[in-house]
Image (cartoon, rainbow, N blue to C red; front, side, top):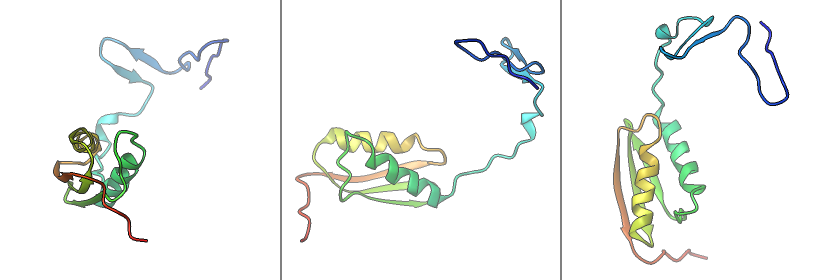
Length: 114
């Protein structure tokens, strides 16, 4: 299989044909027999923590995330109702999440113990 290149983009390999009407590719094995692998609770947990940590709209310090059978529970305190909603909305987008139990409270941030 060879790819063809020009200065600005890559064209389709010689033996792959795109059927735009059907949204299918020929030249690849049948994708219908690929087993669906459900993300594990531990994967969802790690992804949720990463997602919350890197979201600039959510103050993630002190937030707790637990996952059981695809149900994510959020606990802790956020400063604004928008943070509470944003956290839930972001987590719902993760693969494998069946439901989000949002137990986040609105209030002043908890003081860290020194």
